Amino acid sequence: FGMRAEENGWRKATGIFLRNEYSKFVLSCFRLTYYKQEPVPDNFITARQLLIRNLADYIRSHSQLHWSAAPAMFRLGRKKIDFTDIAEAFYDKTGELLWIEMHFDTSRENFSLLTSEQIRDALRRMVININKLRVSECGDQGRVLAGRLRRWARRVPGYSYGARHELKNLVERLLTATFIHCELLPRDPAAMRGRRLSSPNLRKYRNPGWGVLNVIARYTPDFREADLWVQFHHVPVDGMPMQELLADLKQSWGCAGVLAYPALSSPAARPEILYAGNRLFRNRFFIDFEPMLALRRELNAKYVTLMEGPATVAGMLIWGLAQHRFFRNCKMLFPVDSEPKSGNPAERELSLVFIRAGKYIDRSNPLDGFLNFQKEFNQRLWHTRKGSSESYELLELYSMIHPLFYQIALRLMPGSMSEFVGSMGLSILRNADVFISPLSDLQVNGFMTIGDLTHPTEDGGTAGAVSSCGTRDQIRFYQEAMTDLARNYRRFLERQP
Image 1 (cartoon, one colour):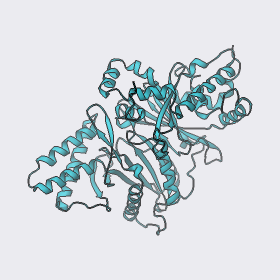
Image 2 (image 1 turned 180 degrees about the vertical axis):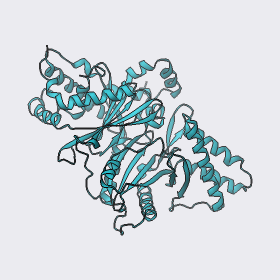
Image 3 (image 1 turned 120 degrees about the horizontal axis):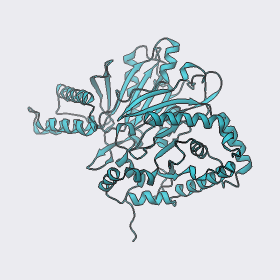
Image 4 (image 1 turned 45 degrees about the vertical axis):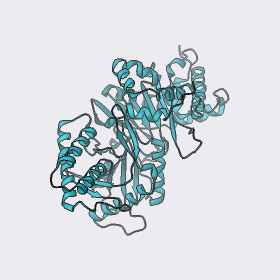
C-alpha cells in the first residue's frame, strides 16, 4: 500500500526490549594518557579534574554522544540533548552514594537565578532518592527517580517563577548527564594487574538517569595511565559506532600500549561471574581462538567458492555453538550494519540476521553441513546489509506496530516472540579489548559478546575475551560450548557415524 516505516526497525526494537539496566553494554579503553600533552598529575584530585575536563571536551565535540533516552508510555525513545554535563559520583565501600559533584557544560550559559546552595540542595535531593531506590531494588529506577525529582522541583517552596523554571531545567540536566566514578588501582603489581581487567560492579556504579554514558575510571598509582570502562545506554547508541569512538579517543589522547590478558594457564585467567539483577548473571572468560582461526584460513583457501564468500568468524562461532546440546535448536540473532535509507553514511543503521544453525548439521557429512550453513549465512549477511533481506523487512514492518502490541505479545506469547527474532544472540566487535554483554527481554537463552580474538597474553600467546549474560546454567553452557569449539573445531567437521 506504499506505507513505509518512519523509524529504523532496530532502533524502535531497542526502545521496547532493551530498557533494563542489564540491557546496557560496556566497552573498555585501557592505558589512556588522559593528560595528553600536559604534565603527569601528582595527586588524585588533579588527575580526576584533568580527566573530566578532557572527557567533557571530547563529548562536546562529538555529536554521536549528544543523546539520552526519553521515556514514553510503552517504550524508551531517544532525544538529542543540548548540554554535555558530567556528574562525578562518590561512593562508600557498601555502595551507598555519598555525594555528586557536577561539572556543568562550560560552552553554554548556566544558571543565573539559582544560588550555589540551591544547586547543592537539588544534588542532595538526588543523592537521597538514589540511595532509597538502591535499597528498595526498584525495577524501573530511572522512571521512579525522574518522577520524584520532578515532583520535588514543582513543590519545593521559596523559589521565584524564574528560579523554579531553572530548577526544573537543572533536574532535567541531572537526569541526562554523563556519570563518572574515579578510583585508584592497588599499588601491588600483581593485585593491580588483576584489578585492571576485573569488570566494574555496574549495579553499584550506575547512571541513575537517562544519560547515554556511565564511566568508571581507574588510575594507576603513579597517575600515568587511566583505564576507562564505559557503559552505554543501548536505546540511543549501538556497539560498533561507540567502539570506533573509543578507538578515536585512544588515538587522539594517546595510549601507553596494549594491556595484555593474563596467561590462560594462570589463576588470573579464571572466569569472572557477576550478578546482573533479575536472577541474571554475566560471565567473562578468556579463550585461545588460534586453532579455530587457523582452520578458518584453511577453509577459506579451499572452499570460498562453495560458500559464496569467506568462512566468517561469526558464522563459525554460530555453527560451532550449535554442536552443543543446549544451543542445537536455538535461533541465533546476529546484528549487522546496514546501508542507511537516506544514502548518508554518517546516519548509521543496524539490522539483524536470524538463523537456526542446527538445521544445517549433517551427521553423515559434517563438512557439507558447515559449507551449506556458511553459504546461507553469507547470503543473509549481504542482503541484510543492502536492506533487502527477510529479516530487514520484518523489522521494518514491526516498527509500524504500536509498542502496546509488543508488550501484550511479550506477556502472552514470550516463546513465540523469541522464535520470531531469535532466542539467543551474538555480537562481535573485533577491535574491542573487553566487550561486556547486554541482554534484551527477548533472548531467553542468553546473549554473548566477543571483542578482539587475537589479543596478546602475558605469556606471548593470544586470546579473546568472551562475555555472556543469562541465567547461571546458560552462562555455564556458553563457556562449555566456546571452550569446546575453540579446541575441537576440526572434530566438528569430521565424518561422524
